[in-house]
Every structure is written in C-alpha cells, then in structure tokens.
Amino acid sequence: MEENTEKEQAEKKVNEREYESKELLKRFLPYYRPYLPVLLKDLGCAALTTICEMVLPLIIRYITNTGSSNPAALTAELVLKLSSLYFALRIVDSLANFYMAYTGHVMGTHIETDMRRAAYHHLQKLSNTYYNNTKVGQIMGRITNDLFDVTEFAHHCPEEFFIAGIKILVSFLILAQTSLALTLIVFCCIPLMLAVCTSLNAKVKAAFRRQRQQIGELNARIEDSLLGHKVVKAFTNEQREEEKFEADNQEFFRLKKIGYRYMGAFQTTTRSFDGLMYLTVILAGGLFLVKGKIAPGDLVAYTMYVSTLIATIRRIIEFAEQFQRGMTGIERFLQIMDADIEIFDEPGAVPLDTVKGDITFENVTFEYSDDHNEVFHDLNLSIRPGEKVAIVGPSGGGKTTLCNLIPRFYDVTEGRILLDGKDIKQYTLKSLRKRIGIVQQEVYLFSGTVYENIAYGRLDAGREEVLEAAKEAGAHDFIMNLKDGYDTYIGERGVKLSGGQKQRISIARVFLKNPPIIILDEATSALDNESEYAVAESLGRLSEGRTTLTIAHRLSSIRSSDRILVLTENGIVEEGNHEELLKLEGIYHRLYHMAEKIK
Image 1 (spheres, rainbow, N blue to C red):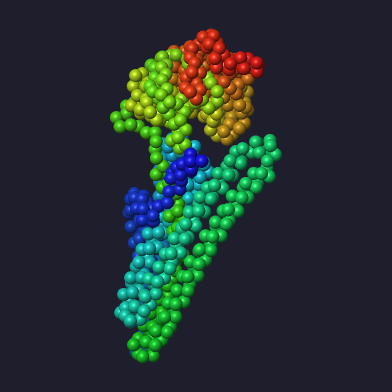
Image 2: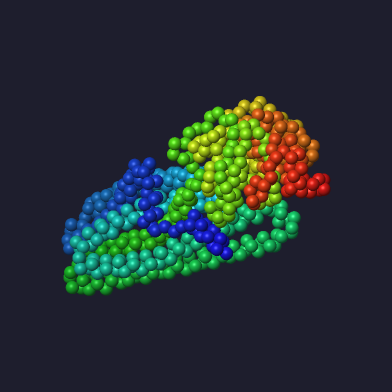
C-alpha cells in the first residue's frame, strides 16, 4: 500500500504540479522575445484603435455643448470637418485592426509552434520511467489541444490588457476634468468588482485545470480501446469498453458543468456591477446636472465614457475564460518541460568511436525510481569482445532490464557498467546507442513503407544497402511478394504484416545499422520454424566478431552460444555453455527439458 502511495505521489509530482499565475507568466514571457518587434507593432496598432474609439465622445460633447451654449457657432461646415476627422480615424482604425487580427494571430501561432517544438524536444530526452508513468493520451493532449489555446492567449493577453489600461487611464483623466467628484464615485465600484471577480476567477481556473486533466484521461481511454480493438472484439467486450468510456465521458461532462456554473456566476457578477455603475451615473450625474455642476454635453460624454469603461472591464472579464484556458495550457506545457531528464550526457562525456565490445558489470544494483522495485543487487558480469552470451531464466528475473542498462535506457542505482574498460556514462548517449543494435521483444514499426522502416536503421543508407540488409534478415523474398514491394504501405504499427514479417523487418534494421554490439530480445520468438532457421543463420553471420547478447525463452535458439547465463531474482545463479549447464542439472536443465516436452 505504501509503495502504491509513493508511486501515485511521484506521478502527481511529475504530471500534476500546480503553478502560481506569476510563475506561469514569468516562464511564458521569454517566448515573446523572438517576436518582440511584431508585438510592439501590434500594441501600437492597439493604441491607435483605442485612440480612435476614445475620440468619439469628445466630438459628441463638443457638438452638444456648442449647440446648447452658442447655436450660431454650430455650422454645417464645423459638423462636416468633425465628420471628416472621424471618418479618417475610422480608416486608421480599420487598418490597425487588420494588422492586429492577422499579424497578431500569426505571432501567437509562432509561439504555439515554438512551445510545441520545445515540448517534443524535451520528450525525446525523457527516460522510460516517465513514459511508464504517463499515459500517451495525456502527453498528446498537452502538446496539441492544450497549446491551441496558447495561440489566442499569446495574441490577446498583452493586447487586451494594454487596451484596457489605456481606456481606463484616458477615461479617468477626461472624466476627472469634467467632474472629479462624480469620477471618484464611479471608480470606487471598480476595486470591489475586481475583488469579487478575482475570487471567482480562481475557481474558474481550478475548474479548467480539472477539465484538462479529465480530457487527457478520456483521450487515453479512447486510444487504449481503439489500439486494442482486436482484443476487444475477440473477447466480445465492446459493452465493457463503452461503459468505461461512458464513465470518463460523464465525468468530463460533470467537470464542465461545474466550470460553467462558476462562469455563470462570474458573468452575472460583472453584469450586476455594470448596472451599479450605470445607476451611479444616472443618479449622481442627474443630481449634478440639476445643480448646474455639469453641462449637458459633458454628461453625454461622461455617459459614453462610462459605457466605454464598463465595456472595457466587461471585455477583460469575458476574456478571463480565454485567459484561464491559456494559463492552463501553459501550466500543462510546463508540467512536461519540468519533468526530470534522468538520463543525460555527463559533464565531460566524449563520443564513442572504436568499439571492441568488452562489457563489464561491476557491483551493479538497480531499482526502478518510481516504485523502488529492486531488480539486481551487487551484480557482477564480464562479457568478452565478440562473445555470444545468452540470458535465460524465469519471467520477471530482469533479463530485459539487464540489457536495457547497457544503452542507458535506465541508469544503474549503484555500481557501474564498463565498455572497453570505461564507464558508459563517460560516453555521449548518441554515440553509445549508435553502436548498439537492438531487436526488441515487442516489435514496433512506424506508419509508412517497408523501405522506410528498414532504412530507419541508418538514414543515410542507399537503396542497395537497404535491400542487402533485408536479404540478410531473410525478409527480401516476402517483401517482393507484397503488392508494391519495398514501397508497400504497412499501416499503423505494421498492422498489415504478420508477426513474423514484422520481426524480420526489425531484424533487417539492425543488419543495416551494423553495430559492434547486438542485443536480441526474443528476436525470433514470432517466427515459424522455417523462418527461425533462416534468420538464425543470418544472425549467426551478423554476430560473427561482434559482442552479442541474446534473451530467449526458446532455448533451442541459443544452444550454440559461447556462454549462457541463468538470471533469476537472486542474480546470475548458473553460468556456462549448453552442455555444462545440462550437467549441473539445475534451473537450466529443468527449463530445457520443459521446452523439449512442449515440443
């Protein structure tokens, strides 16, 4: 129970960290730096549109006061001049607004693209532990949907607050000149309005955070069900999957309902304060007009500026939903960016050039960092250059984990692993992994053609080299029988190929890579007898003169190994070649004869 609790806490620490708004903005602002000239032009256009809007009440006030105090001065010529001025301002407003709507949004898209690139780059550096604890649906949601809202946020956030700042400041200065007392009365409503709205805003933000988390869970549920659709159909569990989906879907609905409740309260509050401010203008302004403390034109202009002020505050408050969506998107982005990079190049790491293939485990202890499950303790092992070593043993003994430590998919907890007498941490990750070829137990092929999947082993290889690698892996003949040969599209995860065909393509990738160290994790487990024999011959040629580690349950495939290790939860308990281990009549003897009986 304690282990589960620790694991949940570790997952929450990585994926559900909460940030203060100040920190979110501080971390987000540097993304504006490359686009600062565009941002400044955008804000300049925002200032122009605001000025154009603020001039109208002044024109109306001037016409009204002139008409009431000196009707003779209010001529058609004056009205025409003022109308021409306003028309010119509207043209400027239109051009500035176009720049804001187009270039401003493009700037936001640039920032979204930069953030997505940074997130994807960071994801490439994260260890297997992160992916073991994080659902792919959650990750996809964070770097796609969550960042969509950042485009609008990046564009509108500085623009809206800048415009609001100008309007509030200009409105206050102009209104204060008209009637300082009335202005102070009206502006006293604003702090109270902001205090109430800030409180509701916090609840809206929390609601959006929970919604984003749940939509990630919903995505993960859909992905898991769709990728496993064959298993679902095979066990006729469609209804069960629909029930699980419905549960997650209803939870998302419930969270959205809560969010909209807070949004409704938020908008109702703002409308109430709008009414309060208008009431203040009607009551106080009317009394000021009765007592002759304000001119009719001034009251008209005052009402228009108050309307502008209220509209500005309402717009900012309505922008709060978009603001919170953007902040939530930034928060979930930062949860990726702040995930620890556990495997990295150590200071002073050098490229690995010539490799002999001498591998040594010195007092290696390893446990998974998320659940502290210890797999090895004080394990020692030496593999000579060019030696063919097979690793067998019961499931869960750590065979695959041992091999994963060599290319540093995980780092040892204690001790060290040496390659040609030097700690593997002293080599750069890229150069180390470049010289290790792996055929994994679970074959993964990318959506694309057969050729593209084999060429993935060495991207600069020519077509003839790709074809030769396929021939050595025993894959050429079946590939040529496919509809389009090497240019055949194999579907997502190679769904159009059989298990044996996928396995041979993955082996061809390693042939093409031609590394000095080879790790075969159940490399022939999906092959029929004929294919296994053909591939075994090819693997024999490939492993000649190279250090080879083979994990196998089918013991017939490793009889010719130079050395066989029997690995259990107690470490390496038996060691020797096939004949030597049979004579011991231990675990290997038992596993071998069990395999013979199954035959």
